[in-house]
Image (cartoon, rainbow, N blue to C red; front, side, top):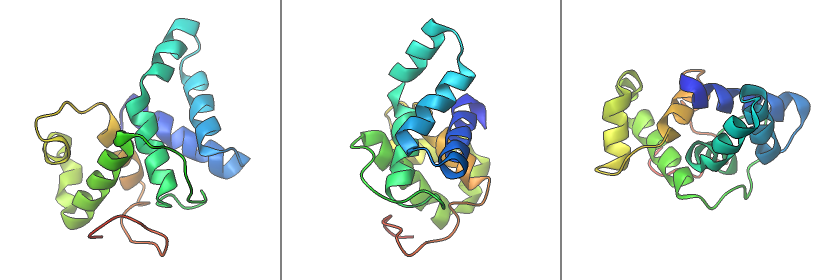
Length: 137
């Protein structure tokens, strides 16, 4: 799952169980994981996995989190593309490198796919929900 997959999963749990906003849950999850001030500061600056998590939330793809404006990050578009690709070819879940190559082309991935795979692995992104705004699902 990787560190940012675990952080995203914990943020999801905090948002759904504790009723926190997705943004606050992400920050709380980071603070739980990175207790040193320098580590936490660096993790907060690492916005790509945050954008992926918030993009999934914004699109209404995570049950228990109300869809809505959470982010304008390009990372959210990468996350939604990864979901589309996984739905079209679930075998990509077993080859993160191949999935990243399909999502990013020659750009460098930055943990966005790890966030998506954390939820895919839990079965939360496999099916289209009524408020699912992703294309080609």
